[in-house]
Image (cartoon, rainbow, N blue to C red; front, top):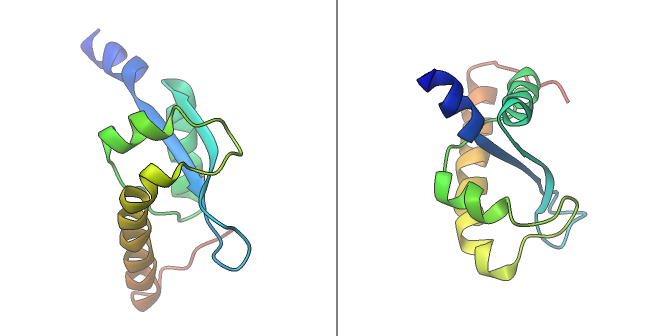
Length: 100
């Protein structure tokens, strides 16, 4: 029962940022419970690193899908993106390929 309650509270937000195309990162998916699990599963299947930051998820969950993140969140999201770029580099060095 406790696991079910934890699952229902689980949240996930996916952001997308392509420096050559986007002015700033966008929220491309968000959800709770089973939707959050699906977002995480898709990311894992595609080799997209997942960074857990509960406070940032709460803030990003307030942004509508396909909207740019607000300027107030740039610094926090920049930290996550820097972590993701490092994780991607590490995966390349170890021969783990991503499928997109």
